[in-house]
Length: 372
Image: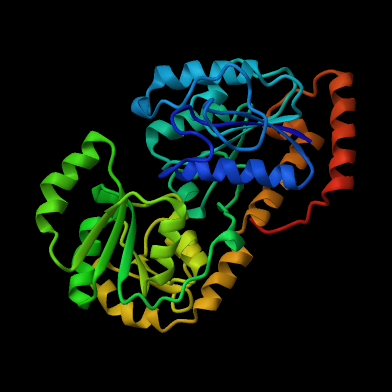
């Protein structure tokens, strides 16, 4: 297959620091290439992903994060550069609603954020001619009338993450400085447990800086060490040597990629039992989930869990290979039956090209049927 991937304009692929969606897009691109498929990537011009980039894209615009004007301009260029692809997977919010798609080419989109009333209206409209992927069962359960084609959990290069010893004598928090991520709760949990806390957190946006200055910074004392935002190597070292990873999220997070990162190092997760966490953490085996006020009691229990089992479960359930296989299986079905994504059959020439693509795909990359 020749697969077109569209990412948002604000962060390069892969991200230098924080950027969960961008890491997923990068993993998909590399995974598709490794499986023998061609990839055309529409992303910020300063992206370093090995997939060929659509020409004419602008450099990343982190300062305009979330800007509608920036995203619309970006996706128009992206779709105009998608000549010759068999299928398009759009990871932006606006893209599937912009009428620039090539005729007869199926389009897939992933719901990366929460399904709230405003976004649900958009996805209902998209579903008329776009296949929709959810990233957790919890995410899609909040608005069950949005027609989701399939739920596919995120994955990552688990095998490429070094395993840690867990003997650092501390717990860690990795995330973003905001109330939803539970940094304030992590500080109180670690103190109740009497265990030092090391914090690696993104803090760029004005609301993040304001929250840190007014709430977090005045609270920090000798029990906490604030490290700022870390690169991957430092982050995995921090996680790998921690007794446990604290994830006391305070909202129904659609998917917590950071939990997979922790499990990949062998470090169990201790967090709140909301959002996608129960789909990632096996309570009593790869971590412990519960109410915020009881999490401090779980830290010693988590530290005694089998770290090799944590890593093995991450390899089994959340590898790039599994995520890629799930996506390719969906793409294959949409190419066989374009109407499943609301796409007209198109010309005979296009259908012949699709059939040829499928033959090549099956010869180079057998597609196992895996559970979502």
